[in-house]
Image 1 (cartoon, one colour):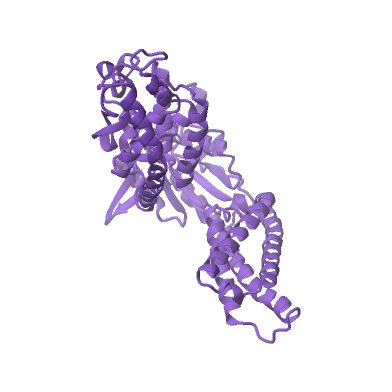
Image 2: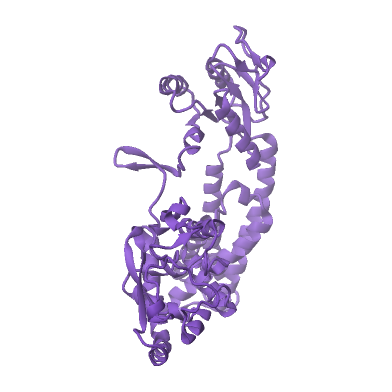
Length: 496
């Protein structure tokens, strides 16, 4: 780096930066508070719309003298459901609140789902006759109108506040090194327009750059403290590497006197470890690196899915499985089922069941020898079963026994190879796919990665898809995979 990019720290005070409008203390509007206010407003809009609809329709149209207290109760329930659904869609974030098309679509969708939930509840409680359909229609119309009108007004307010700088968070960065460059570049790439970097500060006396990532180095942390006394600084990000414990501790001790959010950049750690968040175990503060897949309610949903759908599929397939068993018995000597050791959950070996598709004398129990197109080891019935993947049906028994799931990474034979090497040796992340139960079908298979894996590129691609499935699991992803499996089976792609 050229010497001209560095300056000696002088004793002259740093020039005071030109901050945004709205930088005076107390001139900032918290997006969190704004989100809460909007959410409370939505709750009131939906709840009071129920009462207003009752006044307009029940009294004026039906001539009822009194409005039942049940109307208010249903309105409160509707408001709670609507705001919960909207929040789950991140609808109260500043970016979402600024997008009118998104707000209009999601408002209609959330109110539709709210109506469906209330209707289902009324049906289960057998009170559907208590409420007027005309009132419900007027209620929904008023609720949509109030929410959309509030968004039109809110958008104008947000635009005005943005121009005044009231929604902008002023950040100061401490540490004029690579960490600061990384933070600035990531903020720039994010396109976040509600963040303004005031400048960079560094306590080193020599070889301090005059700017970092296009932002001027304004002085030391003493200068930062002085600046924060008269200007609004919302957060300070310290980019000192974590191994400089003493230096980091001294900086935090000095800066904690400021009325700001004091944060330490963890990019130095994330570069080496995939930190996902921070949690507490009692009084112990922990960095979350990996989380156990399918825990808590996700595990319950997955268990229910496997037990309920697995049982249904097994009952439906039972007659067909009986016919296949008879065909195998009549056309070639040997057992109907073929059991093979394969990797299961947590790298434990399980016995996976299949219909036998090869001659007994030619079967490969280890799975080391791949099946190829026109393989002479495959029987005539076996070719038909493999063409439509019917040989996999007995794995529904593995699902019923709790050894497999309907959807998950496909179980591989323990001796399976890729590129001439054992699979777990050829692909570094291979064993990570066994953090969940293997599946009868999987995300990799519905994306064309079924059948023979004869190259390392194919092996890595299959593992990548399996890991994506594990990290992004949802009940909807499983249902989508099952639906896509039907299309893949009908195509017969890579089946032999």
